[in-house]
Image 1 (cartoon, rainbow, N blue to C red):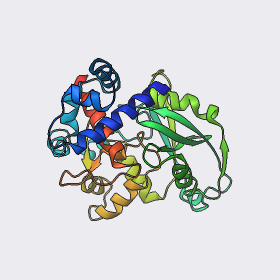
Image 2: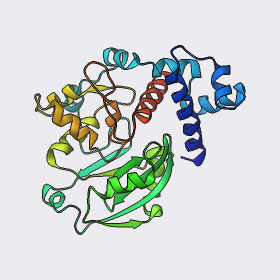
Image 3: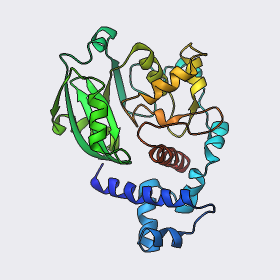
Image 4: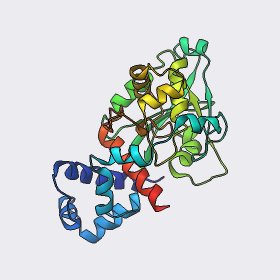
Length: 280
């Protein structure tokens, strides 16, 4: 992943905000003019980032699209788990492995743990990434909240840990996670959370790219069908954005629900994934 990808997302984020403010679909010329770019340049940047035209992408960003995804691309988590998609080995559509911190270690709030951190470009703007010797434990997307806020957010989750600025220690994992250059490599995740939270995050890992599920389906999948509100809270507390795909969880009504790192980012992620899934 390069800084150019982050620049492309910044352009797209501004375009999305302009699209949201309009009650009707916008032409290529109108969008390009708003971005202060030529139509040809804007089309090229847009297509490089998402793989489809601005016109097609607007369909994925339409407010009703989440309901369409729930109808046509909803994942049955029970089935996914039954065939092992969320096992602690290699996952089906991401090159990830994961290990959960023990409840006793979690209760110590990170005491004795060294967490490396650094800033990296991602498909959705700059990202603050954190990791232990076992794997990535935090990814905060900073486009909406800013890096200072994101840093306070993540460090506040493990207040007794020692935090060391060491981006080079994380770079090989980040390169695979955001760029997928070497598909023979894996990106390990270190899940640091309460047992109930980890169950929810494990269920999120079973949702394939380009698909969505609901908070109530997640509650059912983890054998707590009445704990929909608690599931929503655990989804919101997911510290590893993008790789643990909390952006794929929607309300049963088709509403997007909240997103800890900003709803514009969630909408961009869902549109990006849906467009790429269709293009493949």
